[in-house]
Image (cartoon, rainbow, N blue to C red; front, side, top):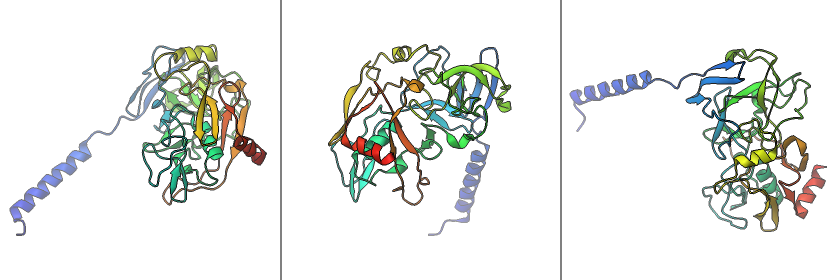
Length: 331
């Protein structure tokens, strides 16, 4: 039986009420940050977060999850993912959660443990999975981010011009109220004195929207092309050891020494999982794996052709012929 005019009218009235309610629902608060030149801190709100929410420093940052926000109110994460795949030799004919990072024909495979930085993970997969099988759409796009909700793990290169002269522009704020800028100092080169958190003291360019005047000298962070990429800890700290002390308790911590981590059937590396305290600027990149192409399906993020890199030294020691071959190809 068709609905009566009375029931139709009631339905339309209820629909109109719901629509009006949705329209009247307040949106998330707009960014409202102010800068205190005396302390070097930004304070206020961004997206739905209060800044600073970390008020005692130095301090450990979240190993998984948000550590800050970009100027576009996108989340900033630390260097780690929770992991990919089910084990070094595991395969499947359907994907799982966490997703398998490699797909060769109809066989899923690949493994990165939780607590490995995203660049080392991706480079490891290119050295351990079948050629052309890495699912690039799972990893960072050209803007240094991925996933939904979208968040950045690495250099947010789309938020500033890395080729511009002078100090890189501001790209965000961390949860301790300190600003983060792009990769370069006023010299046009990466700073040589970043601490293990990824910050240093120096003059910064103006950012009028947040009340920062040009040449204000403050402690601030920089994006980097190597771990920890955006943040190792809330600084400042005097040394990598001081950073490690911030992560010395719990099940996810800096162990003070690298352990053998098996990635594939014949591939492993030494790594201190869930320790975001790298030697940073003091350590050159050790292995560079260049790659081309994408296996992204239609509708996925645009193909990316970045370079994945891992730091050299105590943190990571590559130990396979595959890695050596990758170096030869990249050269």
